[in-house]
Image (tube, one colour):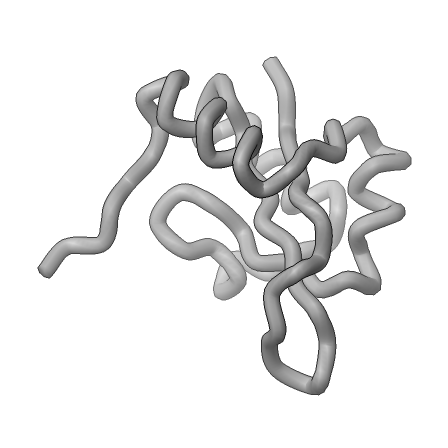
Length: 87
């Protein structure tokens, strides 16, 4: 069971850079971790949370594993937890 976070490389609201927070084992683990981190439910998007650069270090200190964006996506797909946007 691992929660993963990629680098804050994605431009977003308030002039901040943003990361993705995912679990490679279960959505429940991801939601529980986000709650502990203080991330609001509205930040959840299909299979990940969008989190601002200001919480990256805290996520790692709480146990999230910092990985590249490519590895994060590969592990999410390998776990069968990737949810693509419906058209």
